[in-house]
Image (cartoon, rainbow, N blue to C red; front, side, top):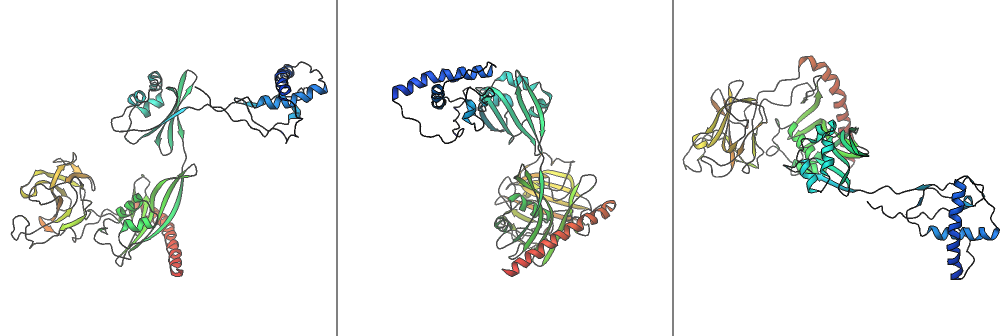
Length: 471
């Protein structure tokens, strides 16, 4: 490895007086004579030999010679400002502090792709495979490098293929650091503490939730979380109105003085078409977290209104609808959600798979049995997920299949039905059963924890409303 030439620091002496002009031959003679004298004097001083007095004429030669000689030296860097008077031969304490530049290594930043292994990464970048074998025997490295996931980041430093260090982020708060120690390697887990800061935000809808969030400077992930909290009460495609607004308290994660990511939403209020919805996050003593109303009721329902991320409703619940293919009056006992082929279809609620397969004009379909004698049907699928097998239980939000156009369908969409005691109900208007409220044993702790958070949200609202009134 070659070190880069280091720039000289020229601030080691006071501003010199103009030197006496000499002829060019005399100057080069002084260089040739003075440099050996300077080196010899420094060697004698450091070895403890008593210095010899130098004549006045010799001293006059040494100062400019040292100045000229140093300009030709690239590897030496003086770490501090130096008074050149200390370099006179009559100062036995002179020890010039020298420092060499830090070695520079080649650095590789790797984003793991599907199917990548550490062996492939080393071969592709022409790194020493013997070093990889050494690392694989270290317990900490073996545990955290055996399996790589797409998207993992790995930083490698090497010297002409010889590994110097390897760093992999294990979690937000810890990294694996492998470093070379003479002829071997050592691996350790380095903790990286984070700082969680609370922020407030306000948004007013003019066209859509996402446009208002962008205008308010909120990230996509944060606004998706907000929509997820109120998804059981607000349809963010069809129910949104101009001048709907929202207030949120959320966490930001910082590390080493830099913003890393958005954290959890702590509390939120959404005002939709004259109705107000509020939610507070609560983590119980068992570590489970969820969102509840200020009274302790879960904001979740036993069912979600729309089990797919759709672009529009192509056909609503209508007992007198004219069928687009059969061209006859035929009741449409569900809701059609138009979406691109392959869009994941989610279970509307916790339940058991009682049918999976081809079902006449429904094409590929899945039927789930839920509590309270409720069943839901999902039709026209392009395919099924592994979770959707007859007899298996699925959880609300779990993917059971994918949007398609099988059966009697003119375009890709999900046909969704909701039945209570065998009778079809409009999935968009039926009163959905509530999810379980907060456990009684946690109620008092929840109320004590939630109130200060709600007070903070209210203060932010008042401040924000006051500023808007001034505008």
